[in-house]
Length: 206
Image 1 (cartoon, rainbow, N blue to C red):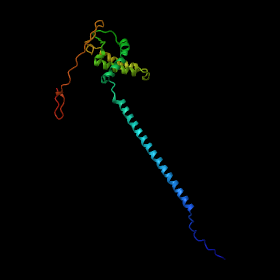
Image 2 (cartoon, helix red, strand yellow; image 1 turned 30 degrees about the horizontal axis):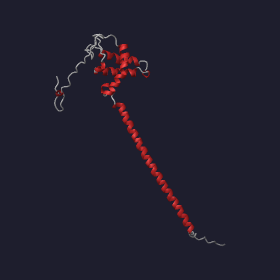
Image 3 (cartoon, one colour; image 1 turned 45 degrees about the horizontal axis):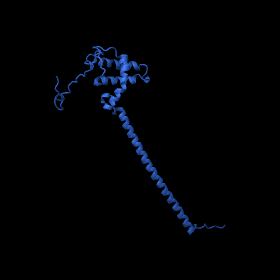
């Protein structure tokens, strides 16, 4: 029986000039690819930062718009600036003349006065404007069939009772349309500041 001896370990590969050149070319290609990927990564990071900044700006703008819509702008006409107030009055005057007065105004008497210069009476202006806003909302078809009735009950009738009362804002104005008269009632004096409670002191009351 014959025994075979194992082959010895393989010898080291022969390194030639061509092999070295091939390795160098491969290394250069890997380095070039690495540099290209680094450029792409930088561009993606820049694009991400710009998009994130734009999204942040949009969120802040949306939050500002929502805050303005919810509470930044008053619907009360007496809070409008002069130009906005003038435009609002011009817009609602046809409604006052052709709907409020023509349909619900009734006759002018000493017990039911009216003033053709109603925009100059702050109380009347505010009350009429609020009633007009409610009319726009409650007479819309989306308010349902009961919307107009709710407007008449909750807004129109209280308005007329306040405006056309003998002691209302028109109490010193027209009682006869053939003899027009207009007078603004004086406002009550402002608060006596000495009556304000003082922190740390007992409040005086009667």
